[in-house]
Image 1 (tube, rainbow, N blue to C red):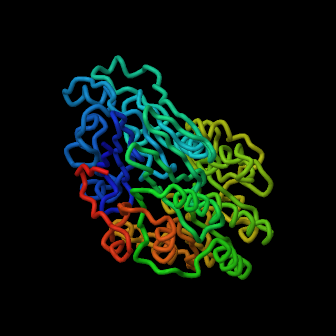
Image 2: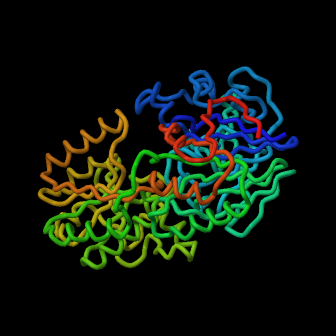
Image 3: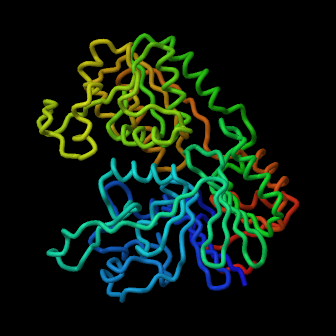
Length: 470
């Protein structure tokens, strides 16, 4: 008997945690953070307590309370006995936090299966981030009951890497990973061959990106196997087809940048290689030097290892690293304690805000909102700010967005929204499903699952925590 239990991604965007069981084999399809559930109880200065292990996460329903999956040290913290792992693996579709981050809580002997590039992204995230209980995906430090035991080295997780064309065997299950186009490289959909028939899991995908042919490879293979169930994302099922595209981001942004005679600032998710390449190309064509952060450098240095991505490393042509002020505020090298900064601090392409202010027109600075205090030193009065991210879609994002606009208004920055979503629109989604033609649709990663009822095939309205027989 094959069963599916959905522990996340139900009537919400992200947080996917789907347990598939077949003839004694259990695997999770993703194990991500639910931003929506977390935001109900926590925010920037009210966070789950690290000292409580997973107690806050279990109590507030951020992770499912099921046996045989969690780390021994975290169970001990809440007075439970260690448990042998009862799951044979996690299939990770891609490296976004809402699919990957809560792997942090899982038992060390549960292997993670993911694409090679997804693993590189996870490495970059770990290198550039402060270690915390919610992001220890690559390895983790045990949280013992006694302080004297805190200095033990991290425990590495078991990763099994793949590319399209590989076949994965997990006990009785055979899985075929196939690349899809998304706003992060190394994204995959899966065809899982079960004893009841093939099950298709889309992960996150789109048809309007630069590699629509990748998604079509997945669609055509899924159609060929005639799936009994299709578990599909539906982030934008309510959004009709538009003219959004990466070439449009390029054309619209370049037009505004050419008109701008002051400093250009852009903000985009640095996991999005397509967006990096778009603005990197614009910078070179417009005679501007692209300035990135030391955190961004961690990603470039991993991406350049994959020759198919065709990107420079952090010392590449026309790339500069923006040196932040720390401790004394004097840029003295002894001020920097983060390893990822220390190992790059002497690179010849390191630059300061004071250097940029001398000739602001010559630069394009990639600056995330959370580092907007650097605008005080950059002084970009009457310059251009391009927001190449999704517009706010919840209350917390609205508050940050208003605060962002206060900064932009203060410095009289001209604002431009220029973005191409990583998620498929409703028109393309329905066409994709009709091509694959599964017997049953299970919509997840969406706030509008009812809109899938318009399709000709049977649609299952999923309830969180309920087991479904296939």
